[in-house]
Length: 449
Image (cartoon, rainbow, N blue to C red):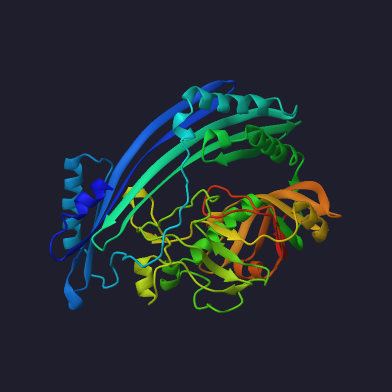
């Protein structure tokens, strides 16, 4: 915080300034065939500076931004000069302003675990090696482990601005993942398993191993699915991915630019009444949780959809001004090299009453989707069009039946939200901006053979 404040205090007359400083480290270990294939340890630090020149009511504000991957005093000063120079030539915009304190108190959440620092590197290597060894020996059908990885990271951030904001945040993460390749005859299938925590001590190699083996072996013998319409039950990991697309449509920035299928629908029923969707970065279980957003405002719990009715969008300061509202403490940014924008951090559906097995039994007949492909090209947050490749298992008599592959699942996000028939109680926080849980959606189109 001392460096951020020191730079902000150099603001000149007629300019506002924001200084974002971060530092951190990462470790990555990859095991293959009983040995360490790669080992990486890296430290990073940097500064991002935004300068806004006030041209008055007639001209508007000019924003200049510059960043550098160093905290060397001379580099920081050069970055400040660049930001000022960039502001001089920027296009005027009356809505470009810095965030101001809004009275919200930051949640006291501890996202830091010293175990990331204190655990010896040899122990981290041993986790990756043991995961790879255990996965290879877990099932005779596992022919190969293409990779077993351990990674961790820690980051500390400080932000100061001439509008009076002073904020700090820090967090640690640790991650295990493994890819198992199972085979029978000429057929082979790949499954991925992982375990996530705040420190190595919170990781569970057996969980990652079991998940990878199950996901690879149960798809052996998969055939191309048949075309038709049915209820589709989505795996929690898939729902986490799909909610990240819905998140982009709930961004106030997307709404003001006309890039959201939710635009103009506040107060309308946009989903089944069982659907309540919340963005809560103050929930420490979320791996993207934070006490402060990317502009230094306090993060807060925002209920976006309640009982199926669209309540609000998430905004940063600039998008809020353009929408004639206030920031929801939802600015996100990609570190010191990025500028803030509106976005979700920790989306979660309020859990239902049933677990995955009970949902399968209720559905009776349908398709269980274990994984999808083509999300970025096949799901459109502007129009709501939805068409993705899928693989999984047919559901017959309320239980898993034959595995299927090369199926296209299609609908629209609007229809899917209205057609939710079951929300699982098997909530699982995953890396990314959304938690996952089993979800059943009725009347989706399948395209196969």
